[in-house]
Image: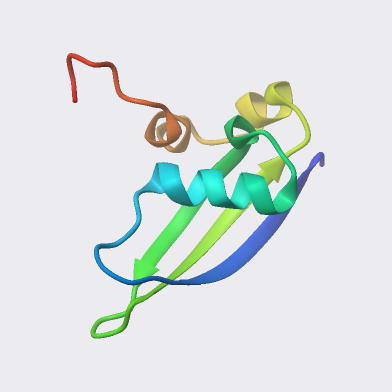
Length: 84
């Protein structure tokens, strides 16, 4: 399969980072387009400024669309201005 799976622990200060900001940071660290990254699992630990997550990084858009579950693809999309 044309993807890599990545598990990560993110330490932060202040409010929990948005899915979009996590996606952007992972894209920068992996030298990939942020549209090729799908965040699957994000859990914050109670009382800690820490988030445990899992991401899948695809080589191309076609593989991502044919493989990934539809609801996860929708979560990663930017909201239209009327929804925001």
